[in-house]
Length: 217
Image 1: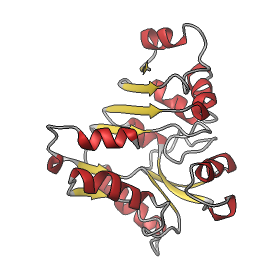
Image 2 (image 1 turned 60 degrees about the vertical axis):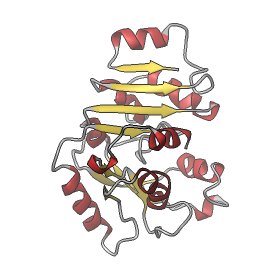
Image 3 (image 1 turned 60 degrees about the horizontal axis):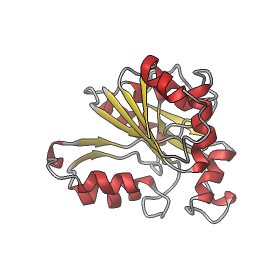
């Protein structure tokens, strides 16, 4: 939220020239629900910035797969300049929980949410308990995220430290979905002291020198 507040408050951006696409949404969730990502983006980004061209994923459409195809066609009609993504407590990017699909070129996927992901949503206060968290979501695919010219990832807080360690010290693997960011030619990951606290000595320097991902904290 701090990142989005800073982004929408940045001076000198002509937001009328920005066309925005939505990463993910719960299946079956109305836009009026407090946990709806459409609601969140409309209130915290689109409305505040004055973005007039945007495409949201309709998770409660009568034909969910048709809604996915429609927004996917719009997304793939031009090259994406910039992607903003986070990393979940289980290492996911968007809602691509482990084991993530690293192969499909489809712009959006219908995915099953694992328990760790769903517990994160409860822990963040979006739901009262696990039974209220949907088990399915629409998510932009890892391959589609990688098609952006530039990727910026912001990963705060100690609760993300295990995922950061797994994704940047371990193998590039569907079991650590955010590890795929290391294959991108222009990706930057921003950590704070807590989220980067488990990284081994010298890893940040090695990543910045040898890997595709630049890690900053």
